[in-house]
Amino acid sequence: MNGNEKTGSPAACAVVNHRTLAMLRAVGADRARVSCSSEPDLFIDGLSCGDQFAAHALAHEGLVRAARPGRLGELVPAVLTTAGRAALTTDHQRAA
Image (cartoon, rainbow, N blue to C red; front, side, top):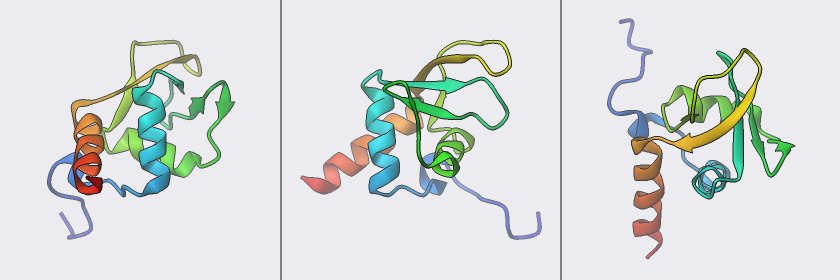
């Protein structure tokens, strides 16, 4: 390790802001699909997410994943991981 690597749990490393929280809420509400790819693109309500950099980060940080395997490029339902649900719960508790 050269000191630039992330450490800790995925939820602790993710850049969680209003935009990414809205994306997580959409996934949690079963409104999102993700492309099967090493750089998964997120689609919400049938439309491509405007911030694919954030979508990639959510997937790479382990907050969102495909609900099932698919062919390369296939769109499949997106689901929250345990870490993704925890990020939403933590934000909800902070807001209360």
